[in-house]
Image 1 (tube, rainbow, N blue to C red):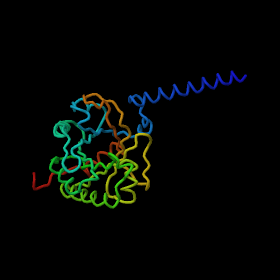
Image 2: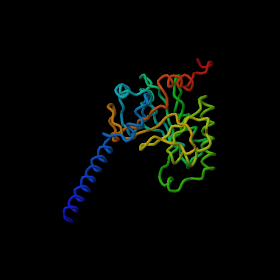
Image 3: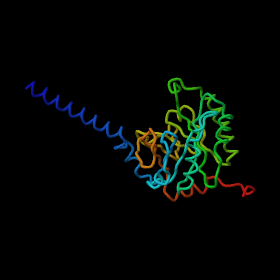
Image 4: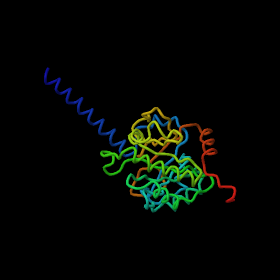
Amino acid sequence: MKKKILKISFIAVSVFLVVNIVVFTLVWNGIIILNGISSYKYEIKGVDVSSHQGEIDWNILSSQNISFAFIKATEGSSFVDKNFAYNFQEAQKTSLAVGAYHFFSYDSEGKTQAENFINTVVPFEGMLPPVIDLEFYGDKEKNPPDRADVEKQLKEMLILLEEHYNQKPIIYATEKSYELYLSNDYKEYDIWIRNVISKPELSDNGMWTFWQYTNRERFEGYNGKEKYIDVNVFNGSPKEFSAYLDNNTYKTPAHAS
């Protein structure tokens, strides 16, 4: 009897392990998207890309049921993504709503980071708001910078970008960076939140406008070393997205026309 129980237990454990390995492999290879069900109800989807995706054929990429694209422009006070100029120009030739994002450095001043972005990103009619990507790098998650220090540089950059583009920037954050640096503040800014495991819940019950729900989607149209691509949803209907574009995209100043 004991041998029979042990045999059944062994089989059960083996099946459990095999199933978990199979599921992990499918998720890791982008065949199963963990947030696939949670994100399904959101009709408006888009991507965010950088040089990691290599050379992008924007005609092919834009034809795959996406409505917007955020393109990495800059990082810190001096870095410019090597593919930004090409991506930004070519994406504008498609039907996508297009914007640019900046990877925020905790080690640089907000003023010089804003200058780097402004010197790189030339606005165009209909451009999505500029994005500041506030996430961790290096050892920053284990040793997070002081909130007051981050706030000083972040708010300086937000102000300078809004003054230049006449658009309120979007702030991208992970749930942890949101809790540490954005919670109970920045309510006037649209939040783009990352959670690739489950539907996001902001620590202060705040609202999000964009949600990066996976970093392991596979699309056609790019040839970089990174074979996966980040995919996001807009928190609203197609009609609401159209209204969002009407109210928030870049408008060429009258004196410049």
